[in-house]
Amino acid sequence: MKKYDDMGDQVIVALRRVIRAVDLHSRTLVESHGLTGPQALILKALQGGSLSAGELATQVSLSQGTVTDILNRLEQRGLIKRQRDTQDRRRVIVLATDAALALLKQSPPLLQEWFAQRFNNLQDWEQTQLLASLQRIAAMMDAEKIDAAPVLSSGSVRATAKAVEEVLEPETNLEDQ
Image (cartoon, rainbow, N blue to C red; front, side):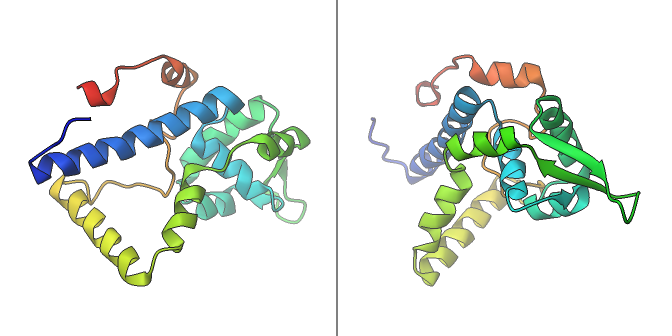
């Protein structure tokens, strides 16, 4: 690893490492379990029992449209079932299948779960300092208004099958660019 004298370069290298870590974790999850991060997040939310599609969207901090797209893919794979609520026919209840629950038992923790555990072990002042620094970086990159859910996953949460295949292909090492 090169030594970077400019502090700005060191910040960029650290950011690239974070992006790379997210990308590698996402690739591993797709390769080992055939799930994207958002798909796994939705299945994990369903481990506790059935939820309506709206409740699910709120719980995982994704838009209703995005959740619907993800649910369509999960249903095609036989990992979720949808059924009309017997008391309110307008509501659709989503539940994980036995296949999904078995898959989740084998899957690694999501990157955000691992991060949250370590972050929560920090003292309050350090958590606040990190949050303020990251918010400042987002502002410096004109990214503070970009909508982002707390899902650490590379690529779009609306990834198509083609996009998932592209994730599986080798890419240029970010450190070499």
